Image (cartoon, rainbow, N blue to C red; front, side, top):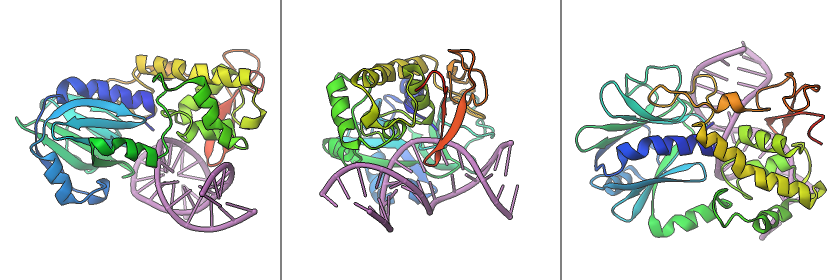
Length: 290
DNA sequence: GTACTTGTTGAACG
DNA sequence: TCGTTCAACAAGTA
């Protein structure tokens, strides 16, 4: 569920609390949540200081002072909750309907313990998320193996690069490619629908059918939508809460996602349609998006 | 009980 | 080898 804006929100929430902290222990209850051996994970994590916290695609990066980076992917239902005191939690991800003040709970699979007694809890109902630790010098290789495209706010994300990445997928639908993280990273089901609505392009359109002008519209709207969502601290669906109990505000600003059968906010005449594309749902206005 | 949801990976296909 | 589609992962909700 967390897409780029939600991950960015968690990173921003955690940064002031976690930066500079020294890891004194890690408690791994479910070993499949880490992508290296428990021994190696403990060796690399324990005793190191978090010098910076950032993001690449939908992954959180905790840069350590030993030349390694702790990577966290929340996938669909992961959450990172920093317990700064008994009563205050900060961070977030995808809290479920459990009391986040009573941690660890049954969904806490990994706890990072900091010197001084603070904890960072990694909870995940569906157990799809993971943590791993990669040497800084191997990070680029790690991203390349995952076929990650450019960051939407990076100057390397040019229109020409975007076109080039799309050119090898001419027969795919635009929705599918934007979800694939290969032409640009950070979009998930919600924000792809929002970008395509704003661009006036139907999600089922094949890449080869899109004109340069249409592609440019999509390209330009990607950072616009994502920046707005970050400004609103992400989208809160169902039980989604930020770690301190606040909710993201982006839900109020969504124009198509989750608005099936509701009046289109642009043309005010058509109703938003919801279709299945692959195994995912897509929302669009049949009048405004051709 | 059944269908549905989500991000990503890997298998199967042509 | 490459592009494309689809099942799989887990568990809560409708």
